Image 1 (tube, rainbow, N blue to C red):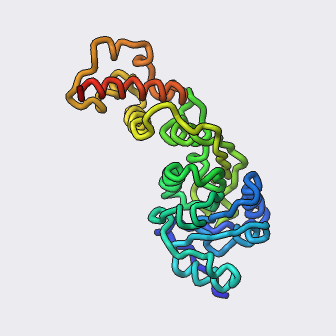
Image 2 (image 1 turned 90 degrees about the vertical axis):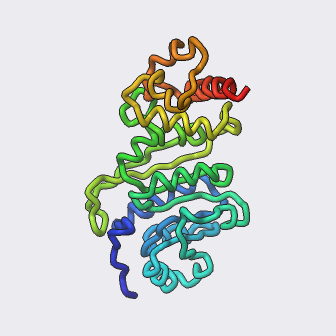
Image 3 (image 1 turned 180 degrees about the vertical axis):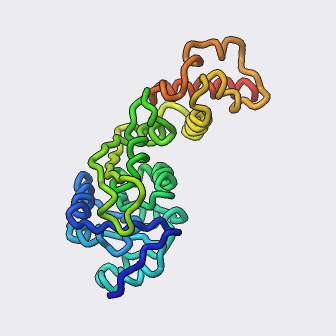
Amino acid sequence: MKLVKPKKNLGQHFLTDLSIAKRIADTVDACPEIPVLEIGPGMGVLTQYLVEKPRVVKAVEIDAESVAYLYERFPKLHENILGEDFLEMDLTQIFDGKQFVLTGNYPYDISSQIFFKMLDYKDLIPCCTGMIQREVALRMAAAPGSKAYGILSVLIQAWYDVEYLFTVDENVFNPPPKVKSAVIRMTRNDVTDIGCDEQLFKKVVKTVFNQRRKMLRVSLRQIFNNGKPTDGFYEQDIMTKRPEQLSIPQFVELTNMVEEQLANYQR
């Protein structure tokens, strides 16, 4: 079989170390029995270990050359190799509305978009594992008060427990990336109702972290546009904090405070 040439425009870095590939594939064992969807299988370095597990495996790959290679290498998977763009897919259709594990060696340039899409389908995805840029993994697992704590940290940790599993060096890829990688696992927590409006929660988190060096009483003004909250709103103790100082329950509290103020405008 003719090998696939990594394409820079697709952010392809093919893992060459089989022992690491197996370790990554084994991360899905935390959620046994349910099907697996692999993103960006490339030449199937993870796929070869995933298909050994007693469960259905599907793989979505946007690169036509890789799809042709996978058809030849894994003839039994032919119907389960999806030549599509994951970011454009309706995930309820992949396993007929059933839950599944998401995994892969994720393209670095769209990994955040992949995880934001995961959040849109969080009830379908109880477990997400795989390899991403180390810097992104650190942000996802960061605790309040750290420099890495940000939008990804809050939005993902609101719904998932994040584990930073291990670091992967640059020299086990073709071509080697310029940064280190990391393998993570996200497991759905017990939260079914976050305690506030979800869309407003996202808006508040993104708004304040886009001005992360400023106190909340400054950054929150963008949400109110030309409106003015009631007297005393900006004088509350929480308003003197910066976003990285807030825990997820505090962000929920803040979102409810903002919603109450916005409701005042509509009366």
